[in-house]
Length: 78
Image (cartoon, one colour):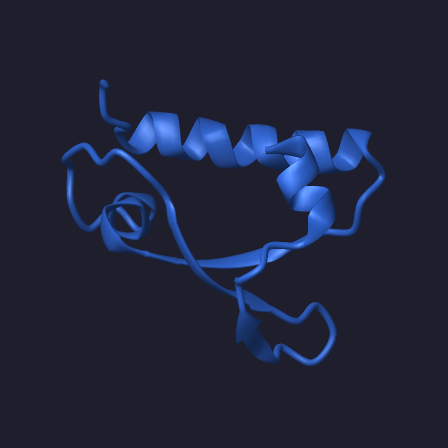
């Protein structure tokens, strides 16, 4: 399985946002870690095989909550 580089991660997250818009769902703030987070922050230039979602951030109060289980609308479009 080919890995994701920075462009692939950026494009994947952009497309996720587009899918959420099409589904008329609320914005979602994902907290990610690992290689994909390092790529997104332009800290490293390597590939990774996944995006590790470790938590969600509340839209209004910024509260950090568990990413498990992911919201149904996110699982549905994923």
